[in-house]
Amino acid sequence: AQKVTQAQTEISVVEKEDVTLDCVYETRDTTYYLFWYKQPPSGELVFLIRRNSFDEQNEISGRYSWNFQKSTSSFNFTITASQVVDSAVYFCALSEAHNQGGKLIFGQGTELSVKP
Amino acid sequence: DTGVSQDPRHKITKRGQNVTFRCDPISEHNRLYWYRQTLGQGPEFLTYFQNEAQLEKSRLLSDRFSAERPKGSFSTLEIQRTEQGDSAMYLCASIASGNTIYFGEGSWLTVV
Image 1 (cartoon, rainbow over the protein chains, first blue to last red):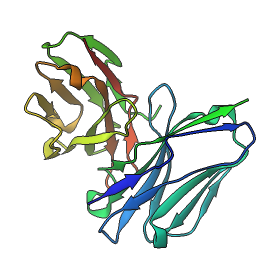
Image 2 (spheres, helix red, strand yellow):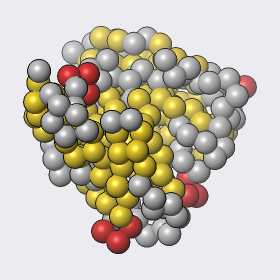
Image 3 (cartoon, each protein chain N blue to C red):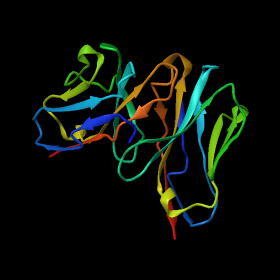
Image 4 (cartoon, rainbow over the protein chains, first blue to last red):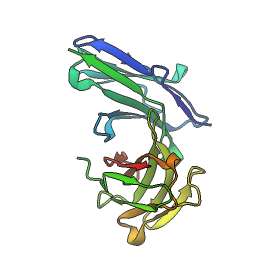
């Protein structure tokens, strides 16, 4: 069975602090995709990253970085020098390859609050 | 704006009434998905279409729910005899094979 666990329900930081959002997943497939989405109060899910299970290279995009460790089934997300605009709910998600990236299993989300 | 549009954005209905949501996917995307998200939870898969064919339905989709995608373009999700437990946000998403899935802004349903 597939499962995504985001153990941190809420995180509160002060602006300019670094923050890491944890994600642990379970799957029996050897080929799968991992995602991070941001959901601001408006409700829209904003795509941040998709990672293929064969690509364990860490990725950095501006203030965002992702650490994929297959050995621990984790795909953690770090925001460097957080800003108030980063306040949102962040979801980690998993899709097995046979679903071709469409049927996602989401974690429960982590609500990030960045205070000025 | 991802290009996936949903209508209406908000709907308040009385228990027992029927409601219908519409989703217009990105035009070249052949697959369309419906998800449901309740407060404090992540979205959960309901069903998906490849062109006009409905290929998979979740156990969450009771017989009061029906989804269609005539002609493989827009899709509708109808809930009959709404119950308070149906209160949620209904998200539509579309994808072209092998690419990234994009979500609409969602349709919020409140059943009173």
